[in-house]
Amino acid sequence: MVEENFARLERELGLLLRRAHASSAALARDVHPDLEPSAYVLLGHIEATPGVRASDLATYIGVGRGTISRQLARLGAIGLVSRRPDPDDFRGQLLDLTDEGLRRLSAARAARREFLLRALDGWTAGEVDALAEQLDRLNSALAAIRQHD
Image 1 (cartoon, rainbow, N blue to C red):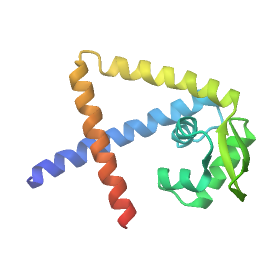
Image 2: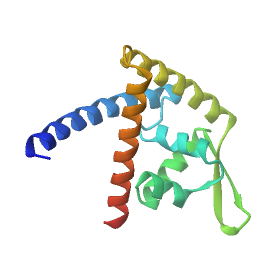
Image 3: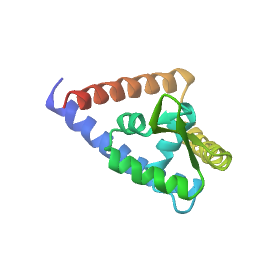
Image 4: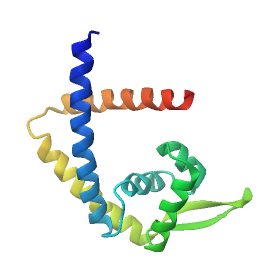
């Protein structure tokens, strides 16, 4: 690869990240008016892995335990996340979405999918799959680098 390839990639990723950040803020507000943009991803991961520990969630997202603790406290305070004792570790707690958290996340997810359907109108299923595959590959590579740093 040459310098021009990386320059274009950097420009396109930068634009995508800026647009995604703005979109995440709107999606978070759709879930709850007081929700931070980063919380949408937290809620999605808790839904996908019921009973996840906060430390595992922090590792998955790539933030420190203090950051995740503050975000989870906020999600609990607005009634979207519940905690229960970890039967394998008396000090630990397991996280789940409340019924309200599931309802609000589902509504926001439907809105997000509608937005993506509009954005990808005209793309073939193969093109969408190829994009998803390459994004998965990039995310895996980024996670691997982060683990080694």
